[in-house]
Image 1 (cartoon, one colour):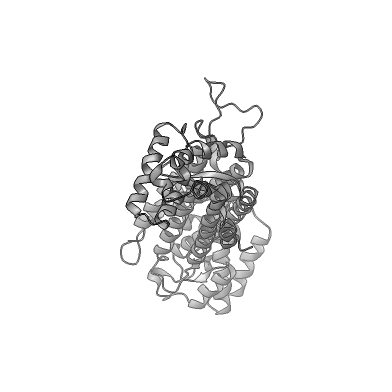
Image 2 (cartoon, helix red, strand yellow):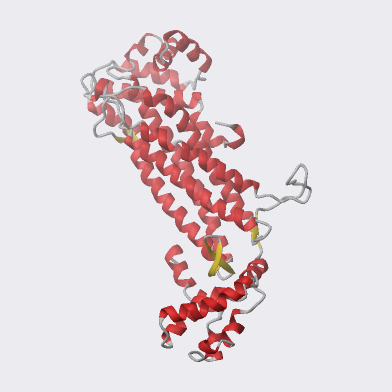
Length: 437
């Protein structure tokens, strides 16, 4: 985790003290369930919870000191707890294995991280919806292959982003449900030394579901799906960031990141206003996607378990969630303050002498009786003159002067095909599909 790209609420989930507190809750709730079964004395649960009620500070340094000797993090933690609680602590971890604690803790952490990310998406969706309605009918040029195609509205661009992130929200909710499972099944997952009711009790207390069948670990296909979902969200961030970066290019300049008073864009060129935030988002998205492949490779473990996944998850669990949390918040800020230039959009829309209306003329000629091939030829030969003039010529005027075209369409019929509003007649329909209102 790099502090530059981290926010406190998310990093707090992954701090050692937070992790150890979750470990304690897992162990203590399991102890409660075992006491109800008569496996351990009730005095043990009282001693453990009484100590915890004093709200003790987690001595991370002492736990690390013990781990340096025993070379095992869960044993080091349990040893430290025993130092605090006394003899009754010996009943902790009865019939359990380390993965019961580690995997269940990771499930809790990822579920809590998911809740933050879902809230991040909710905030982004609010901003995208507001800006989409603000520019619902702001004309702009649609581009394919980076080349002028046909008119759209800037609101439609934002509505598309809204729909994409709404899908991402649904994916993340599903991924959260998939990852939030508890395994307290003992060595190799057979419950030989611990009753399944203990697992059910811990799952209930930790707001998790029971893993239907674990080995000695929770199956890693769950984690692979979770991190793959984060990768998809990151890709959507990059998609919108890339759009803004293009729109901010000097030659386009239809929208740009907010440039605050006192901000400087270049150490050498005082005139620069660079899209640094969206460029940063592009890089952060690459990092989040980079964690997907290791998560996929973690699925194939040896037999009932190995620990090849462990070191990977110690990296990608914190880093992927912290980075995505920061990126979503940054994107929300970018879109909230995005400076939009409708006049420049209109200027760019008009730049190519009406070429954006070529399809409507093509269709009108076919409806007037010309073959599609002849219609295409007639429109294209005039369009290429406009293209080669860099928009200085007018497609409308060239078509009205072309006898082969006017033999099929009157000047008024040609002019009617250059109505910009025609392209926006179904904007309301699309908005209703996206926003449902």
